[in-house]
Length: 445
Image (cartoon, rainbow, N blue to C red; front, side, top):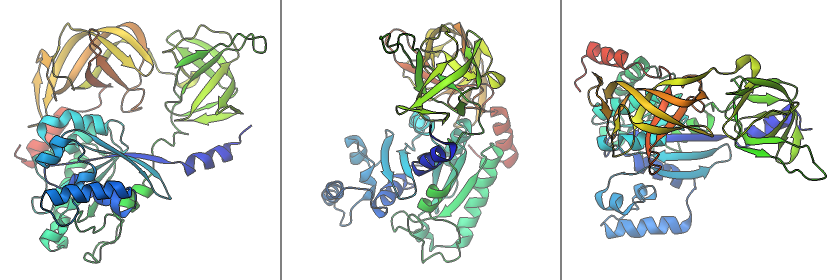
């Protein structure tokens, strides 16, 4: 069997960090990502040649590194980011999946998509403009989605003569605001994405700054999917029953561990049925192991022959979530058609999809001014609000603040399969507190 020490070493060698970039228009998000890819030698020669050719057509002598992420034709023509551009790269210390998200107000839903799985958000600020309305909006979205780490990248420091007081004032204002929203960790870094200062290499122009570069911070920030201390959750994706002469009674449950760790011999509860058993075996990559962690894909066998199917959730009996048919959550509406009270939908939670009805929409949060609108009756594209949903079958939901994976869900249009809204179960965002903070500080939205 694989030892605990050996498996820990294997996981640490393949550490993955998902992060997203956000900021106002022209703050330099795409340029930062392009610089990060270029200076870390994570782009191919033909990609760089294509960027150089596109830059020449636009009359630029130097390659515009923003084009490495602005992949849509409309984005290249307008010089803005519309969709979420995903890029994959790696260094000797860590693998990365980055999402370059839009800065425009009308694409807030795209930022929610990009940041929903992120463990770190890089929020850019133009050093000349400081913290603006859209900066606060993106900080609010990061807080809403419970992103555990936020980096404030004060960009274009070359245009303010690398002045430390400019950086310090912006960092102080943003840190106070983000902390008031409940963001647990904020790291401020002064950079120039265009010149490369403090992106991959330390800047010779800012000797007053002694912190990490952007890449160094990305490589060393703690990754939250090291879930040994979290509650274990295993959504069943597939039931394996070969029914062969060699394995006539074999019954395995395959899927990806959503959080925590599973151990052979541990007593578990199967939800929503509530029946209990003991883990008899765990197979990972064709080998028997005595322990497995998220996000491994494994096959679990139980000591008892229970009626388990796709969509069921296996969890340790001492920390199993409660089941419910009444879901109250914060949702971000991502579809063009509205979400209305009384609407029949499908609710997809991990591997389980059930019928549901929207019973109530108690409030809508407008990110433009962080105001609450009670009983709006419906949510439209880019709206964030509270909903109450009644499901046809019980769900084993965690609170989103406890588990982003098993506390989240999707609302889907049963007619055509369109995703209507992304939901976060429980009281994941105290909008009233946000508004009170904004009023107290006298911010003008």
